[in-house]
Image 1 (tube, rainbow, N blue to C red):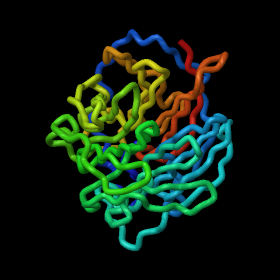
Image 2 (cartoon, rainbow, N blue to C red):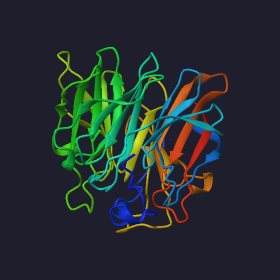
Image 3 (cartoon, rainbow, N blue to C red):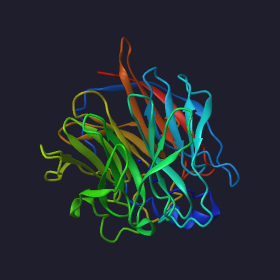
Length: 346
């Protein structure tokens, strides 16, 4: 979901805040992860200038293998073709006259999730009353269905839908909580909170919960400055169980995706080197995280990554699963926002 990903070392208004987002490093790795990535290639490049800010932040797949992507700083949701080489704009979130979004300083559309009927839901961060969850129904303009109660201290980020129970879960990167909202819309309620969701003490940026997925009876969430992957069970009454840490050492983890029905994860690390501020010459990586918490790097800048912000994994096919990695290019100079495709086999 950043996704949090410090937006814009290249955008003057937010350069200082964005720069702070790049601390910590890629942590120790260990190996026994069976899936293998191959045939990695960048299939689309986007534009990132002061005038045109096509920063691909988060992604959700359609049943036909195409994708819907949030361009965070452009406030757009776009539909990307199967090969990734072209796109059309599905919706543009309304402009805000005086945005004061924490960390980012400007309005940004962040997380995205999809219902079975094609309805899209996105998180929108503005620092104003427009901050919250918006619904995008096919052929209709975006509609706000939930407003976070303290938008000046909230950064809605990773978003996931549990369609079976008709609820949405939302990671608040600055508020350091996971919100729960009825799918039809309504008042957000704090569903999970606690020390594990707080940013790392002393971090230069208050970046806590970021990516979020519903998987195997639990809500999984990444904590960016702590470099952790967390699992929060959904109890029979719908409340949150005890937060468990499933992996550590994932410094500056952004969004992530599961590689199948098990608990192996492919995660985007938006930055890398353990230094105080970007640019650091390290444009992030993608790592495979095994169920026991060990992890290994599988993609780097040599494959075309440029501050990767999110990933998606397609269904199993004869030749494996298609992997999509978005690079928002928040920390590179010059920035190269792009979409990378690869094949995942096991």
